Image 1 (cartoon, protein in one colour):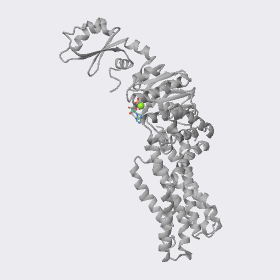
Image 2 (image 1 turned 135 degrees about the horizontal axis):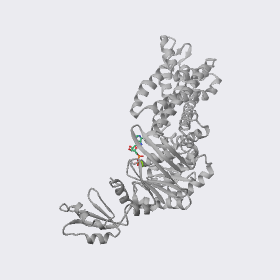
Image 3 (image 1 turned 30 degrees about the horizontal axis):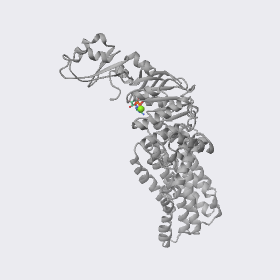
Image 4 (image 1 turned 60 degrees about the vertical axis):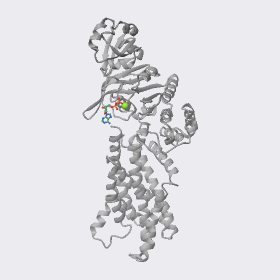
Amino acid sequence: MVARSLVKSYGERVAVDGIDFEVEPATCFGFLGPNGAGKTTTMKMIYGLATVGRGELSVLGLDARTKRRQIKSRLGVVPQETNLDGQVTVLENLLVQASYFGIERQTAEARARELLDFSRLADRSAEQITSLSGGMKRRLLVARALVNEPEMVVLDEPTTGLDPQARLAVWRSLETLKRRGVTLLLTTHYMEEAARLCDRLVIMDEGSIVAEGEPGALVREHVGREVLELRVSDECDAEELVASVDGRLEGHDFTEDALMLYAPDAEELLEAIDHERYPTESALVRRATLEDVFLRLTGRSLRE
Amino acid sequence: MTDVLPSPRHAARVVGRNALVFSKLWKGALLPQFLDPLFYLLALGFGLGTYVATINGQDYRDFLAPGLIASAAMWSAAFECTYNVYFRMNETRLYDAILATPVEVQDLVAGDLTWSAIRSTIYGTVFLVVVTAFGLIHSPWAILLPPLVALGGLCMSVIAYTFTALIPRIDLYSYFFTLGITPMFLFSGIFFPFDELPGFAEVIAWFTPLYHSVEISRAMATGPGPMVLVHAAWLIAVTAALFVVPVRAVRRRLVA
Ligand SMILES: Nc1ncnc2c1ncn2[C@@H]1O[C@H](COP(=O)(O)OP(=O)(O)O)[C@@H](O)[C@H]1O
Ligand SMILES: [Mg+2]
Protein backbone atom coordinates (compact mmCIF):
# COMPACT_ATOMS: atom_id res chain seq x y z
CA MET A 1 0.00 0.00 0.00
CA VAL A 2 1.41 3.33 -1.11
CA ALA A 3 0.33 6.97 -0.79
CA ARG A 4 2.12 9.76 -2.64
CA SER A 5 1.44 13.46 -2.05
CA LEU A 6 -2.07 12.55 -0.97
CA VAL A 7 -4.32 15.58 -0.50
CA LYS A 8 -7.97 15.81 0.48
CA SER A 9 -9.95 19.01 0.91
CA TYR A 10 -13.53 19.65 1.93
CA GLY A 11 -14.26 23.01 0.38
CA GLU A 12 -11.76 25.43 1.87
CA ARG A 13 -10.70 23.08 4.65
CA VAL A 14 -7.69 20.88 3.92
CA ALA A 15 -8.19 17.63 5.87
CA VAL A 16 -5.16 15.78 4.50
CA ASP A 17 -2.33 17.95 3.27
CA GLY A 18 0.10 16.02 1.10
CA ILE A 19 1.06 12.87 2.96
CA ASP A 20 3.35 10.03 1.86
CA PHE A 21 3.58 6.58 3.39
CA GLU A 22 4.17 2.97 2.52
CA VAL A 23 2.86 -0.06 4.35
CA GLU A 24 4.56 -3.45 4.18
CA PRO A 25 2.32 -6.53 4.05
CA ALA A 26 1.76 -8.42 7.33
CA THR A 27 2.77 -5.50 9.51
CA CYS A 28 0.82 -3.15 11.73
CA PHE A 29 1.02 0.46 10.58
CA GLY A 30 -0.25 3.22 12.82
CA PHE A 31 -1.57 6.75 12.41
CA LEU A 32 -1.17 8.61 15.68
CA GLY A 33 -2.54 12.10 16.08
CA PRO A 34 -4.99 14.35 17.90
CA ASN A 35 -8.60 14.90 16.86
CA GLY A 36 -8.85 16.63 13.50
CA ALA A 37 -5.40 15.50 12.36
CA GLY A 38 -6.85 13.87 9.24
CA LYS A 39 -6.65 10.21 10.30
CA THR A 40 -10.27 9.30 9.54
CA THR A 41 -10.18 11.09 6.21
CA THR A 42 -7.09 9.09 5.25
CA MET A 43 -8.76 5.81 6.28
CA LYS A 44 -11.92 6.69 4.37
CA MET A 45 -9.96 7.30 1.19
CA ILE A 46 -8.42 3.87 1.67
CA TYR A 47 -11.70 2.02 2.18
CA GLY A 48 -13.68 3.96 -0.38
CA LEU A 49 -15.91 6.17 1.74
CA ALA A 50 -14.17 9.33 0.64
CA THR A 51 -13.04 10.15 -2.87
CA VAL A 52 -9.29 10.51 -3.35
CA GLY A 53 -8.42 14.19 -3.68
CA ARG A 54 -5.06 14.91 -5.32
CA GLY A 55 -2.04 12.63 -5.37
CA GLU A 56 -1.80 8.86 -5.63
CA LEU A 57 -3.22 6.15 -3.46
CA SER A 58 -2.73 2.49 -4.15
CA VAL A 59 -4.25 -0.11 -1.85
CA LEU A 60 -3.24 -3.79 -2.12
CA GLY A 61 -1.56 -2.76 -5.35
CA LEU A 62 -4.80 -1.35 -6.82
CA ASP A 63 -5.61 2.26 -7.65
CA ALA A 64 -8.03 3.55 -5.00
CA ARG A 65 -9.67 5.88 -7.52
CA THR A 66 -10.77 3.27 -10.04
CA LYS A 67 -10.68 -0.13 -8.32
CA ARG A 68 -12.89 0.56 -5.34
CA ARG A 69 -14.98 -2.59 -5.56
CA GLN A 70 -11.96 -4.90 -5.90
CA ILE A 71 -10.15 -3.19 -3.03
CA LYS A 72 -13.17 -3.36 -0.74
CA SER A 73 -13.69 -7.05 -1.39
CA ARG A 74 -10.24 -7.72 0.10
CA LEU A 75 -10.41 -5.25 3.00
CA GLY A 76 -11.90 -5.37 6.46
CA VAL A 77 -13.11 -2.12 7.97
CA VAL A 78 -13.68 -1.12 11.59
CA PRO A 79 -15.06 2.42 11.37
CA GLN A 80 -14.67 5.08 14.02
CA GLU A 81 -18.42 5.20 14.63
CA THR A 82 -20.24 2.01 15.51
CA ASN A 83 -22.60 1.22 12.63
CA LEU A 84 -23.81 -2.28 13.33
CA ASP A 85 -27.15 -3.33 11.87
CA GLY A 86 -29.54 -2.72 14.77
CA GLN A 87 -32.46 -4.45 13.07
CA VAL A 88 -30.92 -7.93 13.09
CA THR A 89 -29.25 -10.10 15.74
CA VAL A 90 -25.56 -10.41 16.56
CA LEU A 91 -25.14 -13.56 14.44
CA GLU A 92 -27.19 -12.10 11.59
CA ASN A 93 -24.94 -9.05 11.54
CA LEU A 94 -22.12 -11.36 10.48
CA LEU A 95 -24.29 -13.38 8.06
CA VAL A 96 -25.64 -10.26 6.37
CA GLN A 97 -22.12 -8.88 6.13
CA ALA A 98 -21.02 -12.14 4.49
CA SER A 99 -23.89 -11.82 2.01
CA TYR A 100 -22.62 -8.40 0.89
CA PHE A 101 -19.40 -10.17 -0.10
CA GLY A 102 -21.27 -12.90 -1.93
CA ILE A 103 -20.12 -15.58 0.50
CA GLU A 104 -22.45 -18.55 0.33
CA ARG A 105 -24.65 -19.39 3.26
CA GLN A 106 -22.91 -22.50 4.61
CA THR A 107 -19.45 -20.99 4.54
CA ALA A 108 -20.87 -17.84 6.10
CA GLU A 109 -22.51 -19.78 8.96
CA ALA A 110 -19.32 -21.62 9.80
CA ARG A 111 -17.19 -18.50 9.63
CA ALA A 112 -19.66 -16.43 11.66
CA ARG A 113 -19.71 -19.04 14.46
CA GLU A 114 -15.93 -19.16 14.45
CA LEU A 115 -15.68 -15.37 14.64
CA LEU A 116 -18.18 -15.19 17.48
CA ASP A 117 -15.98 -17.64 19.38
CA PHE A 118 -12.88 -15.61 18.52
CA SER A 119 -14.60 -12.46 19.82
CA ARG A 120 -16.05 -14.26 22.86
CA LEU A 121 -19.58 -13.37 21.79
CA ALA A 122 -20.84 -16.88 21.10
CA ASP A 123 -23.33 -16.79 23.98
CA ARG A 124 -24.75 -13.53 22.62
CA SER A 125 -25.36 -14.68 19.07
CA ALA A 126 -29.18 -14.50 19.17
CA GLU A 127 -29.33 -11.15 20.96
CA GLN A 128 -30.14 -7.72 19.63
CA ILE A 129 -27.34 -5.19 19.23
CA THR A 130 -28.89 -2.89 21.84
CA SER A 131 -28.23 -5.49 24.55
CA LEU A 132 -24.44 -5.41 23.99
CA SER A 133 -22.00 -3.31 26.02
CA GLY A 134 -19.69 -0.85 24.30
CA GLY A 135 -16.79 -3.29 24.42
CA MET A 136 -18.90 -6.09 22.94
CA LYS A 137 -20.05 -3.85 20.10
CA ARG A 138 -16.43 -3.05 19.30
CA ARG A 139 -15.53 -6.73 19.31
CA LEU A 140 -18.45 -7.46 17.03
CA LEU A 141 -17.28 -4.68 14.71
CA VAL A 142 -13.87 -6.33 14.56
CA ALA A 143 -15.49 -9.73 13.94
CA ARG A 144 -17.63 -8.22 11.18
CA ALA A 145 -14.50 -6.83 9.53
CA LEU A 146 -13.05 -10.35 9.35
CA VAL A 147 -15.99 -12.12 7.70
CA ASN A 148 -14.50 -11.86 4.22
CA GLU A 149 -11.07 -13.08 5.40
CA PRO A 150 -9.44 -9.77 4.45
CA GLU A 151 -5.77 -9.36 3.60
CA MET A 152 -5.77 -6.00 5.31
CA VAL A 153 -7.90 -4.58 8.11
CA VAL A 154 -8.39 -0.84 8.57
CA LEU A 155 -9.21 0.14 12.14
CA ASP A 156 -10.22 3.71 12.92
CA GLU A 157 -9.77 4.29 16.66
CA PRO A 158 -10.79 0.75 17.58
CA THR A 159 -10.56 1.28 21.33
CA THR A 160 -11.66 4.88 21.87
CA GLY A 161 -14.15 5.10 24.70
CA LEU A 162 -13.50 1.59 26.01
CA ASP A 163 -12.55 0.74 29.57
CA PRO A 164 -9.05 -0.74 30.09
CA GLN A 165 -10.28 -4.34 30.17
CA ALA A 166 -12.28 -4.03 26.95
CA ARG A 167 -9.31 -2.28 25.35
CA LEU A 168 -7.04 -5.14 26.30
CA ALA A 169 -9.46 -7.63 24.73
CA VAL A 170 -9.38 -5.73 21.43
CA TRP A 171 -5.58 -5.48 21.55
CA ARG A 172 -5.29 -9.24 22.08
CA SER A 173 -7.46 -10.02 19.07
CA LEU A 174 -5.46 -7.60 16.92
CA GLU A 175 -2.22 -9.24 18.01
CA THR A 176 -3.66 -12.61 17.02
CA LEU A 177 -4.52 -11.25 13.58
CA LYS A 178 -1.02 -9.88 13.17
CA ARG A 179 0.45 -13.27 13.94
CA ARG A 180 -1.77 -14.76 11.21
CA GLY A 181 -0.20 -12.40 8.69
CA VAL A 182 -3.03 -9.89 8.27
CA THR A 183 -1.89 -6.35 7.52
CA LEU A 184 -3.28 -3.89 10.06
CA LEU A 185 -3.82 -0.18 9.55
CA LEU A 186 -4.68 1.52 12.79
CA THR A 187 -5.48 5.05 13.87
CA THR A 188 -5.37 6.05 17.50
CA HIS A 189 -4.75 8.91 19.81
CA TYR A 190 -3.51 6.61 22.54
CA MET A 191 0.24 6.44 22.39
CA GLU A 192 0.38 3.28 24.50
CA GLU A 193 -1.84 1.58 21.92
CA ALA A 194 0.40 2.67 19.06
CA ALA A 195 3.52 1.64 20.96
CA ARG A 196 2.14 -1.79 21.77
CA LEU A 197 0.66 -2.74 18.40
CA CYS A 198 2.45 -0.86 15.65
CA ASP A 199 5.61 -1.96 13.84
CA ARG A 200 5.79 1.43 12.21
CA LEU A 201 3.76 4.54 12.57
CA VAL A 202 3.34 8.08 11.39
CA ILE A 203 2.49 10.97 13.66
CA MET A 204 -0.07 13.25 12.05
CA ASP A 205 -0.97 16.80 12.92
CA GLU A 206 -3.24 19.18 10.99
CA GLY A 207 -3.28 17.03 7.88
CA SER A 208 0.46 16.47 7.68
CA ILE A 209 2.87 13.77 8.78
CA VAL A 210 5.30 15.21 11.30
CA ALA A 211 7.32 12.05 11.94
CA GLU A 212 7.56 8.46 10.79
CA GLY A 213 9.35 5.39 12.08
CA GLU A 214 9.30 2.52 14.56
CA PRO A 215 7.74 3.56 17.88
CA GLY A 216 10.93 2.93 19.91
CA ALA A 217 13.20 4.57 17.40
CA LEU A 218 10.96 7.63 17.17
CA VAL A 219 11.14 8.10 20.92
CA ARG A 220 14.93 7.66 21.02
CA GLU A 221 15.45 9.95 18.06
CA HIS A 222 13.21 12.82 19.11
CA VAL A 223 13.16 12.68 22.89
CA GLY A 224 15.81 10.41 24.33
CA ARG A 225 15.48 7.83 27.06
CA GLU A 226 13.92 9.48 30.05
CA VAL A 227 11.77 12.40 31.08
CA LEU A 228 11.69 14.46 34.23
CA GLU A 229 8.22 15.92 34.51
CA LEU A 230 8.12 18.87 36.93
CA ARG A 231 5.23 20.87 38.27
CA VAL A 232 7.01 24.06 39.27
CA SER A 233 5.65 26.47 41.86
CA ASP A 234 4.70 30.03 41.02
CA GLU A 235 7.80 31.61 42.54
CA CYS A 236 10.09 29.44 40.43
CA ASP A 237 11.52 30.84 37.20
CA ALA A 238 11.25 27.83 34.89
CA GLU A 239 13.34 29.39 32.13
CA GLU A 240 16.17 29.96 34.55
CA LEU A 241 15.84 26.43 35.91
CA VAL A 242 16.26 25.05 32.40
CA ALA A 243 19.31 27.22 31.85
CA SER A 244 20.87 26.02 35.10
CA VAL A 245 20.92 22.37 34.01
CA ASP A 246 21.26 22.95 30.28
CA GLY A 247 24.40 20.84 29.92
CA ARG A 248 22.58 17.72 31.08
CA LEU A 249 19.50 18.14 28.86
CA GLU A 250 18.65 16.65 25.49
CA GLY A 251 15.73 19.07 25.24
CA HIS A 252 12.76 20.49 27.06
CA ASP A 253 9.13 21.54 26.55
CA PHE A 254 6.56 23.54 28.45
CA THR A 255 3.00 22.32 28.61
CA GLU A 256 0.19 24.21 30.27
CA ASP A 257 0.92 22.88 33.74
CA ALA A 258 4.25 21.10 33.54
CA LEU A 259 7.87 21.38 32.48
CA MET A 260 9.28 18.40 30.59
CA LEU A 261 13.03 17.85 30.76
CA TYR A 262 14.51 15.19 28.50
CA ALA A 263 17.71 13.53 29.66
CA PRO A 264 19.55 10.19 29.44
CA ASP A 265 19.19 9.80 33.21
CA ALA A 266 16.28 11.74 34.69
CA GLU A 267 16.98 10.60 38.28
CA GLU A 268 20.44 12.10 38.17
CA LEU A 269 19.03 15.28 36.62
CA LEU A 270 16.54 15.61 39.44
CA GLU A 271 19.37 15.48 41.98
CA ALA A 272 21.35 18.06 40.07
CA ILE A 273 18.62 20.68 40.29
CA ASP A 274 19.04 23.33 42.98
CA HIS A 275 15.75 22.84 44.78
CA GLU A 276 16.36 25.79 47.10
CA ARG A 277 16.39 28.23 44.22
CA TYR A 278 13.88 26.39 42.01
CA PRO A 279 11.11 24.98 44.21
CA THR A 280 8.84 22.40 42.59
CA GLU A 281 5.49 21.00 43.65
CA SER A 282 6.02 17.56 42.24
CA ALA A 283 8.55 15.67 40.18
CA LEU A 284 8.04 12.53 38.12
CA VAL A 285 10.81 10.45 36.61
CA ARG A 286 9.60 8.25 33.75
CA ARG A 287 10.52 6.71 30.44
CA ALA A 288 9.98 8.82 27.33
CA THR A 289 6.92 7.96 25.23
CA LEU A 290 5.35 8.78 21.88
CA GLU A 291 3.34 11.43 23.69
CA ASP A 292 6.59 13.28 24.33
CA VAL A 293 7.52 12.91 20.67
CA PHE A 294 4.27 14.60 19.73
CA LEU A 295 4.86 17.39 22.21
CA ARG A 296 8.42 17.83 20.97
CA LEU A 297 7.36 18.09 17.35
CA THR A 298 4.22 20.18 17.62
CA GLY A 299 4.60 22.04 20.91
CA ARG A 300 1.16 20.74 21.94
CA SER A 301 0.05 17.72 23.88
CA LEU A 302 -1.72 14.88 22.13
CA ARG A 303 -4.84 14.90 24.25
CA GLU A 304 -6.26 18.36 24.39
CA MET B 1 -22.01 5.49 -16.59
CA THR B 2 -20.25 2.73 -14.65
CA ASP B 3 -21.00 4.57 -11.44
CA VAL B 4 -24.73 4.81 -12.24
CA LEU B 5 -25.58 1.39 -13.66
CA PRO B 6 -26.11 -1.01 -10.76
CA SER B 7 -24.71 -4.52 -10.55
CA PRO B 8 -27.77 -6.78 -10.13
CA ARG B 9 -25.76 -9.25 -8.06
CA HIS B 10 -24.78 -6.64 -5.53
CA ALA B 11 -28.21 -4.98 -5.52
CA ALA B 12 -29.76 -8.37 -4.73
CA ARG B 13 -27.68 -8.59 -1.55
CA VAL B 14 -29.22 -5.35 -0.32
CA VAL B 15 -32.68 -6.71 -1.17
CA GLY B 16 -31.84 -9.78 0.90
CA ARG B 17 -30.93 -7.74 3.94
CA ASN B 18 -34.11 -5.65 3.75
CA ALA B 19 -36.27 -8.73 3.23
CA LEU B 20 -34.71 -10.35 6.31
CA VAL B 21 -35.64 -7.35 8.45
CA PHE B 22 -39.18 -7.27 6.99
CA SER B 23 -39.63 -10.96 7.73
CA LYS B 24 -38.97 -10.19 11.39
CA LEU B 25 -41.17 -7.11 11.60
CA TRP B 26 -44.27 -7.72 9.50
CA LYS B 27 -46.20 -9.70 12.11
CA GLY B 28 -45.74 -6.92 14.63
CA ALA B 29 -45.02 -3.33 13.80
CA LEU B 30 -46.07 -3.50 10.16
CA LEU B 31 -49.43 -5.24 10.60
CA PRO B 32 -51.57 -2.06 10.89
CA GLN B 33 -50.45 -1.02 7.42
CA PHE B 34 -52.24 -4.06 6.02
CA LEU B 35 -55.50 -2.87 7.62
CA ASP B 36 -55.25 0.69 6.33
CA PRO B 37 -56.91 0.20 2.91
CA LEU B 38 -59.55 -2.03 4.50
CA PHE B 39 -60.78 0.89 6.63
CA TYR B 40 -61.14 3.06 3.52
CA LEU B 41 -63.05 0.27 1.82
CA LEU B 42 -65.39 -0.13 4.77
CA ALA B 43 -65.96 3.59 5.41
CA LEU B 44 -66.30 4.69 1.81
CA GLY B 45 -67.32 1.54 -0.06
CA PHE B 46 -69.75 0.14 2.45
CA GLY B 47 -70.58 3.41 4.26
CA LEU B 48 -70.73 6.16 1.67
CA GLY B 49 -71.30 3.51 -1.01
CA THR B 50 -74.82 2.84 0.25
CA TYR B 51 -75.71 6.41 -0.82
CA VAL B 52 -73.55 6.64 -3.91
CA ALA B 53 -74.71 3.38 -5.38
CA THR B 54 -73.08 3.63 -8.79
CA ILE B 55 -70.54 5.71 -10.68
CA ASN B 56 -71.03 5.76 -14.45
CA GLY B 57 -73.15 2.63 -14.11
CA GLN B 58 -70.45 0.82 -12.11
CA ASP B 59 -71.11 -0.27 -8.55
CA TYR B 60 -69.25 2.22 -6.30
CA ARG B 61 -67.49 -0.57 -4.39
CA ASP B 62 -66.22 -2.07 -7.63
CA PHE B 63 -65.04 1.40 -8.65
CA LEU B 64 -63.26 2.04 -5.36
CA ALA B 65 -61.57 -1.31 -4.62
CA PRO B 66 -58.93 -1.40 -7.43
CA GLY B 67 -57.82 2.15 -6.66
CA LEU B 68 -57.18 1.16 -3.06
CA ILE B 69 -54.91 -1.66 -4.26
CA ALA B 70 -52.78 0.95 -6.01
CA SER B 71 -52.79 3.27 -3.02
CA ALA B 72 -51.82 0.46 -0.62
CA ALA B 73 -48.71 0.01 -2.75
CA MET B 74 -48.10 3.75 -2.82
CA TRP B 75 -48.27 4.12 0.96
CA SER B 76 -45.88 1.22 1.42
CA ALA B 77 -43.36 2.78 -0.97
CA ALA B 78 -43.81 6.23 0.56
CA PHE B 79 -42.94 4.98 4.05
CA GLU B 80 -40.15 2.64 3.05
CA CYS B 81 -38.28 5.18 0.94
CA THR B 82 -38.71 8.07 3.33
CA TYR B 83 -38.38 7.29 7.03
CA ASN B 84 -36.89 3.81 6.71
CA VAL B 85 -34.22 4.87 4.23
CA TYR B 86 -33.57 8.10 6.11
CA PHE B 87 -32.84 6.19 9.32
CA ARG B 88 -30.52 3.71 7.66
CA MET B 89 -28.67 6.48 5.85
CA ASN B 90 -28.42 9.21 8.47
CA GLU B 91 -29.27 7.90 11.92
CA THR B 92 -27.92 4.35 12.26
CA ARG B 93 -25.29 5.03 9.55
CA LEU B 94 -25.89 1.52 8.22
CA TYR B 95 -25.16 2.69 4.69
CA ASP B 96 -21.60 3.62 5.69
CA ALA B 97 -21.13 -0.01 6.70
CA ILE B 98 -22.69 -1.39 3.50
CA LEU B 99 -20.63 0.92 1.29
CA ALA B 100 -17.42 -0.33 2.91
CA THR B 101 -18.19 -3.75 1.34
CA PRO B 102 -18.17 -4.48 -2.42
CA VAL B 103 -21.65 -2.92 -2.63
CA GLU B 104 -21.46 0.48 -4.35
CA VAL B 105 -23.88 3.40 -4.10
CA GLN B 106 -25.78 2.54 -7.29
CA ASP B 107 -26.22 -1.07 -6.09
CA LEU B 108 -27.43 0.13 -2.72
CA VAL B 109 -30.02 2.49 -4.21
CA ALA B 110 -31.16 -0.09 -6.78
CA GLY B 111 -31.44 -2.75 -4.05
CA ASP B 112 -33.43 -0.47 -1.77
CA LEU B 113 -35.78 0.48 -4.62
CA THR B 114 -36.25 -3.11 -5.72
CA TRP B 115 -37.01 -4.13 -2.17
CA SER B 116 -39.47 -1.26 -1.77
CA ALA B 117 -41.24 -2.34 -4.97
CA ILE B 118 -41.48 -5.90 -3.66
CA ARG B 119 -42.82 -4.63 -0.35
CA SER B 120 -45.41 -2.51 -2.18
CA THR B 121 -46.46 -5.56 -4.14
CA ILE B 122 -46.92 -7.54 -0.94
CA TYR B 123 -49.27 -4.89 0.47
CA GLY B 124 -51.08 -4.42 -2.86
CA THR B 125 -51.51 -8.13 -3.41
CA VAL B 126 -52.76 -8.84 0.09
CA PHE B 127 -55.43 -6.22 -0.47
CA LEU B 128 -56.20 -7.64 -3.92
CA VAL B 129 -56.94 -10.95 -2.22
CA VAL B 130 -59.15 -9.20 0.34
CA VAL B 131 -61.25 -7.35 -2.25
CA THR B 132 -61.52 -10.49 -4.37
CA ALA B 133 -62.96 -12.22 -1.31
CA PHE B 134 -65.48 -9.35 -1.04
CA GLY B 135 -66.47 -10.16 -4.65
CA LEU B 136 -65.33 -6.78 -6.00
CA ILE B 137 -63.07 -8.08 -8.78
CA HIS B 138 -64.77 -9.06 -12.02
CA SER B 139 -62.05 -9.96 -14.49
CA PRO B 140 -59.56 -12.84 -14.55
CA TRP B 141 -57.02 -10.31 -15.86
CA ALA B 142 -56.63 -9.20 -12.26
CA ILE B 143 -54.33 -12.15 -11.76
CA LEU B 144 -51.73 -10.14 -13.72
CA LEU B 145 -52.02 -7.20 -11.34
CA PRO B 146 -49.11 -7.92 -8.94
CA PRO B 147 -46.29 -7.18 -11.41
CA LEU B 148 -48.13 -4.01 -12.44
CA VAL B 149 -48.54 -3.02 -8.81
CA ALA B 150 -44.79 -3.51 -8.49
CA LEU B 151 -44.27 -1.04 -11.31
CA GLY B 152 -46.37 1.59 -9.55
CA GLY B 153 -44.61 0.88 -6.27
CA LEU B 154 -41.22 1.20 -7.92
CA CYS B 155 -42.06 4.55 -9.49
CA MET B 156 -43.38 5.88 -6.19
CA SER B 157 -40.25 4.55 -4.45
CA VAL B 158 -37.81 6.34 -6.70
CA ILE B 159 -39.69 9.62 -6.18
CA ALA B 160 -39.68 9.22 -2.38
CA TYR B 161 -36.02 8.11 -2.43
CA THR B 162 -35.07 11.19 -4.40
CA PHE B 163 -36.72 13.41 -1.80
CA THR B 164 -34.93 11.52 0.99
CA ALA B 165 -31.55 11.81 -0.69
CA LEU B 166 -31.93 15.55 -1.12
CA ILE B 167 -33.40 16.76 2.17
CA PRO B 168 -31.04 17.95 4.90
CA ARG B 169 -33.47 17.41 7.79
CA ILE B 170 -36.08 14.80 8.65
CA ASP B 171 -38.80 17.36 9.50
CA LEU B 172 -39.07 18.29 5.82
CA TYR B 173 -41.08 15.10 5.29
CA SER B 174 -44.14 17.03 6.44
CA TYR B 175 -43.97 18.81 3.07
CA PHE B 176 -43.65 15.53 1.22
CA PHE B 177 -46.61 13.90 2.91
CA THR B 178 -48.94 16.86 3.35
CA LEU B 179 -48.31 18.55 0.03
CA GLY B 180 -47.41 15.47 -2.03
CA ILE B 181 -48.73 12.13 -0.87
CA THR B 182 -52.04 13.13 0.73
CA PRO B 183 -53.36 15.24 -2.18
CA MET B 184 -52.20 12.58 -4.61
CA PHE B 185 -54.09 9.96 -2.63
CA LEU B 186 -57.27 12.05 -2.66
CA PHE B 187 -57.15 13.38 -6.23
CA SER B 188 -55.82 10.50 -8.34
CA GLY B 189 -59.22 9.12 -9.23
CA ILE B 190 -59.47 6.53 -6.47
CA PHE B 191 -62.58 7.99 -4.83
CA PHE B 192 -64.30 9.79 -7.72
CA PRO B 193 -63.85 9.91 -11.49
CA PHE B 194 -62.62 12.94 -13.43
CA ASP B 195 -65.61 13.04 -15.86
CA GLU B 196 -67.53 15.83 -14.18
CA LEU B 197 -64.46 17.86 -13.11
CA PRO B 198 -62.80 20.66 -15.10
CA GLY B 199 -60.31 19.29 -17.61
CA PHE B 200 -57.20 20.58 -15.82
CA ALA B 201 -57.87 18.26 -12.85
CA GLU B 202 -57.12 15.17 -14.88
CA VAL B 203 -54.18 16.89 -16.59
CA ILE B 204 -52.58 17.56 -13.21
CA ALA B 205 -53.34 14.04 -12.04
CA TRP B 206 -51.69 12.69 -15.19
CA PHE B 207 -48.33 13.91 -13.86
CA THR B 208 -48.61 11.80 -10.69
CA PRO B 209 -47.61 8.14 -10.58
CA LEU B 210 -50.64 7.13 -8.55
CA TYR B 211 -53.08 8.22 -11.29
CA HIS B 212 -51.47 5.76 -13.70
CA SER B 213 -51.36 2.97 -11.10
CA VAL B 214 -55.05 3.49 -10.35
CA GLU B 215 -55.99 3.44 -14.03
CA ILE B 216 -54.04 0.22 -14.54
CA SER B 217 -55.56 -1.36 -11.47
CA ARG B 218 -59.14 -0.48 -12.40
CA ALA B 219 -58.67 -1.69 -15.95
CA MET B 220 -57.28 -5.03 -14.82
CA ALA B 221 -60.17 -5.49 -12.39
CA THR B 222 -62.80 -5.06 -15.07
CA GLY B 223 -61.09 -6.09 -18.31
CA PRO B 224 -58.13 -4.11 -19.68
CA GLY B 225 -57.67 -2.15 -22.90
CA PRO B 226 -54.49 -0.99 -24.65
CA MET B 227 -54.29 2.12 -22.45
CA VAL B 228 -52.83 -0.10 -19.72
CA LEU B 229 -49.64 -0.24 -21.76
CA VAL B 230 -49.47 3.55 -21.98
CA HIS B 231 -49.82 3.90 -18.22
CA ALA B 232 -47.22 1.20 -17.63
CA ALA B 233 -44.86 2.95 -20.07
CA TRP B 234 -45.31 6.20 -18.13
CA LEU B 235 -44.30 4.51 -14.88
CA ILE B 236 -41.28 2.83 -16.45
CA ALA B 237 -40.11 6.00 -18.18
CA VAL B 238 -40.32 8.15 -15.04
CA THR B 239 -38.55 5.50 -12.94
CA ALA B 240 -35.72 5.16 -15.46
CA ALA B 241 -35.30 8.89 -15.91
CA LEU B 242 -35.25 9.64 -12.21
CA PHE B 243 -33.00 6.80 -10.97
CA VAL B 244 -29.77 8.68 -11.51
CA VAL B 245 -30.84 11.54 -9.21
CA PRO B 246 -30.86 9.64 -5.89
CA VAL B 247 -27.72 7.74 -6.94
CA ARG B 248 -25.83 11.00 -7.41
CA ALA B 249 -27.33 12.60 -4.31
CA VAL B 250 -26.57 9.65 -2.01
CA ARG B 251 -23.03 9.48 -3.35
CA ARG B 252 -22.51 13.16 -2.68
CA ARG B 253 -23.84 12.61 0.82
CA LEU B 254 -21.98 9.46 1.85
CA VAL B 255 -18.86 9.30 -0.31
CA ALA B 256 -17.75 12.94 -0.24
N1 LIG C 1 -17.14 15.30 5.41
C1 LIG C 1 -16.43 16.35 5.87
N2 LIG C 1 -16.77 17.60 5.49
C2 LIG C 1 -16.06 18.66 5.90
N3 LIG C 1 -14.98 18.60 6.69
C3 LIG C 1 -14.57 17.38 7.11
C4 LIG C 1 -15.27 16.19 6.70
N4 LIG C 1 -14.63 15.14 7.26
C5 LIG C 1 -13.61 15.64 7.97
N5 LIG C 1 -13.54 16.99 7.88
C6 LIG C 1 -12.53 17.87 8.51
O1 LIG C 1 -11.26 17.39 8.18
C7 LIG C 1 -10.36 17.48 9.27
C8 LIG C 1 -9.78 16.13 9.57
O2 LIG C 1 -10.81 15.31 10.14
P1 LIG C 1 -10.60 13.77 10.44
O3 LIG C 1 -10.01 13.12 9.26
O4 LIG C 1 -11.91 13.26 10.92
O5 LIG C 1 -9.55 13.81 11.63
P2 LIG C 1 -9.22 12.71 12.75
O6 LIG C 1 -9.83 11.42 12.34
O7 LIG C 1 -7.73 12.67 12.78
O8 LIG C 1 -9.79 13.22 14.02
C9 LIG C 1 -11.16 18.08 10.42
O9 LIG C 1 -10.89 19.47 10.46
C10 LIG C 1 -12.59 17.84 10.02
O10 LIG C 1 -13.43 18.82 10.55
MG1 LIG D 1 -11.11 10.27 13.36
